[in-house]
Image (cartoon, rainbow, N blue to C red; front, side, top):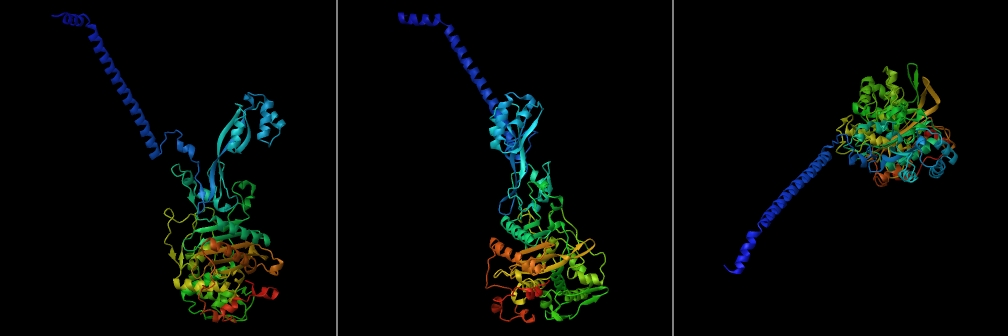
Length: 597
């Protein structure tokens, strides 16, 4: 053994503790590594558990009573929009600002000065009195905007209390108020579509998805403006108007006047918080003549448009006398009966129809029940208790039965759309509101004849009662109706209910238009008349000209209903339609006599 070997051997043999320390260090590192791995696994497990719980909440909506992010981000009530996405009702974050005077920390004078600056509805002295009153709580502002809340919070007074207060607002103000309705103090719908859709609007799973109505805000605005102008001009007590898609039953516009603002319905007299379209019933007069003639054609009572009826003298039935406002003094055929709006001829046709067929048709058209629409506030028609011969005859021209304007509108949709009755809807048609099959009430052939007759009423060439509603190129057709207002168990001979119901373009009907004025008064330019021809017809014409392009219907002077077989039947009607269009009835008392309905 050499010296080097001896020293190395002796060194290893002399220091065995180093070997033990190295082994312990390795064991400690391994133990720490294992512990770290366990902690990481536990951490990952907790993360996985939290992620799983969040995923479950996102999918199944359960929150175990906790407030979720969705509850914070989404309003507590879904929005309502028009058919184009324009907001009609929405919930926004408003705030309540209050204070606990008995808990005031800062000097009252300083706080009062800052409050008077930010909330100027009270003076400095008033705020100082409130702060020194030692009351437990006092409201400073309700429905405060968020930017104001930030400024009030910056005052730095712990006694000031700020609470989130969601507020239902109607950004279009009075627009479509009777359709939308309002919400009560408990946040639930109290009237209109707010009430109808209440459960849907507060459903947590659907609050982020707006509900689309069938209303078109642009058309709604035009209808409200034109109807409002007519109501004001003729100082009518009330008015109602409607635009519908005759093919789908969708209500494109619906209004009732006097109007109310759903943002503050409490500011409106209770009697005005209603929708006259669905809640008021009227005798709608000669508008019923279209139903009677359609029934007569469908039943085989009228088989030829040249068929004539005696209108030489008033018709006496029991103690009643039926007369025409402007007696023809001769026999009238069907086109003349419609364009001149003859009560006498209509009564004779209704008499031939008889009770059974007349009642059956009215029932098919829903005239015996409240109108079919989602709204809950609806009135039932005043249905005759006894259908004697005189009742059958007078109901044929719209007297002795009272219905809502919507009842009549639904009937007219069926008359012009090919003969199919469908309920009205205020919800946009689509997957969630599909088009119902409907029920056939008249044949397509009968519907085509009705369209011809309705167009004649408005065409100046035929000199009908609706000619003041004519708008060149839009092919409007319709029927006027004027009835004495039912009042106090009888009739007020000085007040009328004046209505125009029509559709356009009549060669391919898409839209129904309707207006009713309740109790209009004559003006100088109506020569003392308050009939529908004078007080409603012009407003209908102006409205059609406004809304037609909005709805994709443009004037076309080269299109019209083919009236070649009917025009020759009208007494003194010019044969040259193009030449006749250049002439119109001259204004004046003499012309006014021809326009009575």
